[in-house]
Length: 280
Image (cartoon, rainbow, N blue to C red; front, side, top):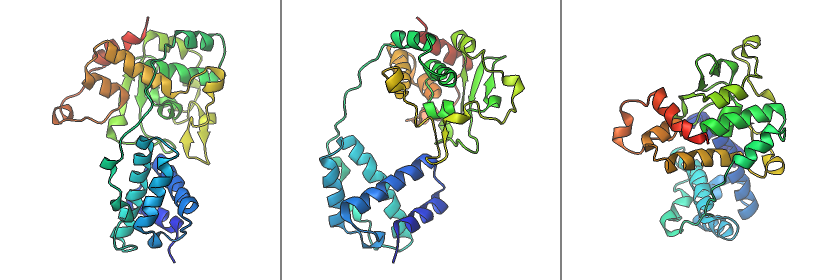
């Protein structure tokens, strides 16, 4: 008898995915057991795959459903390669037939939120994290997992680099970002020189259980927004200012979508000029 945990262990060993991917695989396999009742992945049929799809059609947005199916289909590709199954049961689900639906994102103005933060709405470590995400557009998990050696306050640079507890999703996430004067001022409280370079700046924001940084921040209660809003605001503001998509991608760590984007690099001056649009 095969087990879902056995399949997970095999996929982790072969693919060596990021912790976030492992967490998604675990959630999806738990869903499969709950929805279909099948505890042996080698016994999953196309009917079970359709049952999984139909359940989610009634419970989540279609874009979310498509993402979840891709995760679990990837697991079965490994099961197929290792001859646990003779076909991938999720190949019967044609994602192009699932019409994408998502909630339109509302543009959030952060001036009022900034004032709340300045008035002490967040604990000190959360406040420093807020300003990093606010003025760089980093994922909150990227900012929360930085080490002291990643902060160059003298030259005004933040290095988004992988470390043992915080790997990066792909090579495009590895980047250097300029620190605006407003951000350098907000970071003055961090005594970088008194800490080990390899120490994490925000150790209390790591969840050993979830293997995730910043996943349990409750800014919605304190500020009325989630951390994701900061990244969305940076992207929207820079696009409204007609910042080149190549420059924007280098700031946000986006994968390039064309062959031209593979060549050359974006200067720190260009990135700083783009980020200055975040200052009123």
